[in-house]
Image 1 (cartoon, rainbow, N blue to C red):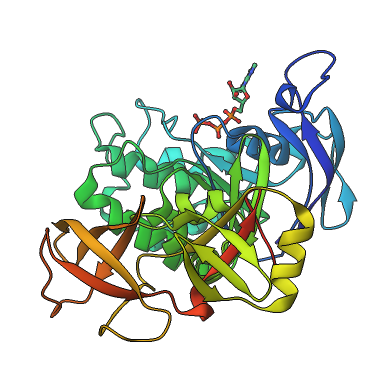
Image 2: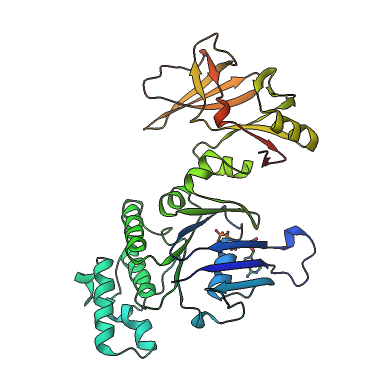
Length: 362
Ligand SMILES: Nc1ncnc2c1ncn2[C@@H]1O[C@H](COP(=O)(O)OP(=O)(O)OP(=O)(O)O)[C@@H](O)[C@H]1O
């Protein structure tokens, strides 16, 4: 089991990093608790793999220290870290049987044949591979191969953490959810620290207790799926998480109010004072799920013109014009609304966040 601590860890692939953009991973502080399930979520190129490779020891960071259970392992090679890594494209030995593939890490460490057999059977059971143990690995489906790869990580009793780098990307969509569920079960039963890299928010939010959202080599926010959804600390998080993302409306502040397209909405005196003092670019954020349709005449209601209503299967999204700005609204099932109509909307204060230069004012 492992508690992983990153102290001022940063990495640059250029010899003498000068500006922020030279850092693939900007120096950061992060603690991953023993037994937790974490996701690293962010767009392509944001530094997820770089961070994962630093933890596993494949990459030595330009700066900072990596501690596993309090021991500094910054310069220790991967084999000294008791960390298993599962890659997007699993490396499986086709000439071996499934059982031999699973046993491989134990054979390498000189574990006795009887203990190896017991562990392989346990892991095979956990991953529903028992019926396949005697089969040759060649010709197995992508999800079977990924299960073997995961099994090879789990087979060692001393494995402290499992790092998975986009493990489901090449898996058929209709078996993806099965493997995702399996992974969650494995984590729940073994309580091994799990770090899961993905650019897919559904994967991150369903698997992890804590999600680390990254962009441009920087950690934008660490939080539970609920915290990231309800209280995005940065406009990037608000927009990147959610489908569609958060509405981010240019606005102004006056004392005790935020002004959007000429409408005054109440705002705490403290937040309005901080925002005014900062002098930065202001946005009012509200998720489409929290915008409410209200009857005409409701205090603070905003009149909008609906330009489009999209049916996304389980729900519908209305796109509406508020003056010059566009607002997305998730409609309740029974709500009747069509393009060309106008209606009244409310932004409940509880669900609005004011951002200055992309950061939430709290
Ligand atoms: N070996 C390398 N040499 C030079 N630059 C690199 C190297 N590996 C990654 N980079 C750069 O570092 C940045 C972060 O890359 P990284 O692979 O960590 O991102 P990522 O979030 O995992 O992206 P993806 O999801 O596409 O794998 C990118 O700009 C990438 O081009």
